[in-house]
Image 1: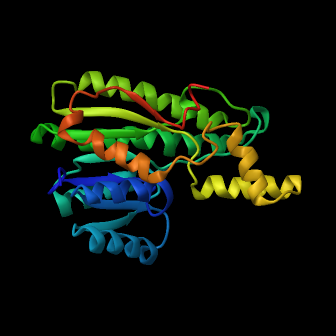
Image 2: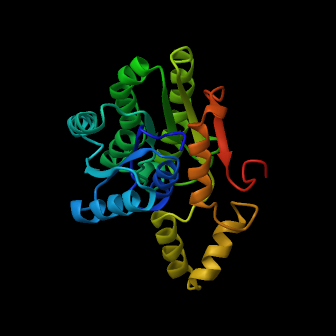
Length: 261
């Protein structure tokens, strides 16, 4: 229970990888703020499930991360409820699949806002209280694609690479404040976006979903399986532990060996 009494905000966490991260932090004792764009009823149900399972407080807040005022309002609500954000996990993501010359300007702006600018705004709004407590953890959810290029993913590759620069800058600036900042770089996790993508590929190629999944994974994770969301959550929980105090400014792959391949 290393995080007992602390508050963790995980963006994009009403389902999928974000929820796995929130679950791991709740298991370590943190009070949880789930975030997303689903209904209050759906998000509130997820929060209640975490609270009942782990004996912590959990709430759900809806906010459009493209809008700075909504980000600010969400942070104010969290501080009113819990006093501060002690653990910030910038997990929310927006991605589009398109060649550069066909990429829509509004899609580019949305991805920059959600994937990159929101991470900055949430950090800047949280750091003062972290400094006052001489403790804080900022984790940016980057990706294997922060280390390599890919076709038709200009927004995703660019923003995930940008998070590594943000991680290093914050880590150096905050190094003597009790705050660490790290990036976690998963390989292919079975998120709703990825499973939807695999179903689309199966339909396009006229093969089964199982065949499309196998083909999708064999060119990525050398293990031939998805990276477990629970493993990503466990890594982030470890980064919040006393034993990880000197891990700062790091880019940590959890990709089944994809980067090494």
